[in-house]
Length: 289
Image (cartoon, rainbow, N blue to C red):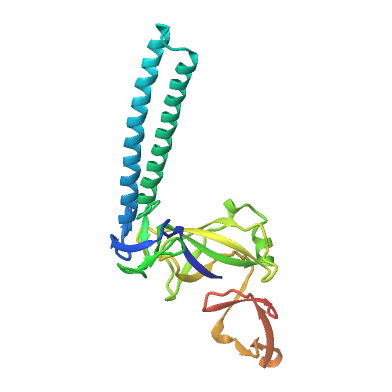
């Protein structure tokens, strides 16, 4: 079955803000860890906003301190009968307003710092860096995919089964599904066997097929995300008639062999074979005894 290879986690990296790329801290194919800074965007404007927000916090803090002193003084005057309830409540209200203004300024500062942090594009989890299509000085925005980072410690191989094959193979649970092999694009067989872990519960009405995912270990990093191959699923048959392909003649998608008949004469006879083969032999399903 034709297959596509993907990392267990392929993450497209895009910035959360618009800006010019000022630093590229990784190379293609490099392994990166979670939280590592991959790119830095021009952030002078955001740094200025942080400084401005910090100044507003300082001003609000000073105002809040003054209002607190005024309120505490009003409490003492009220206890000594110098001022009444109205003056005391006014001082309390002024203090509450100052605290609210300080909280608002602190929220603005936190937002400015968060916007500044968005200029440092980080990797959310460990993996291998893909292509880097954008260079220093390029203007990027939130819709720009700057690179893809793939977790390739294990690889998921996607392939599709026909509805008939899916019905035949899913009589048992996925845990009883046989181990599968991966034939690579160069025709060689991958050294590790894979295990089918997922099968779609929906049949694609356009193709009549079911998507299946097999998981393969990739400790040697031989498999690359985006690669292609062929999944080979083993099947057992205790009463199969196996014949060499070299003895079969194919004419207009039909297969024929010469059978020895009466008086030692050969008879040109059509046979039918299983759709899957190993490249050397056929399994005859009709026409032979």
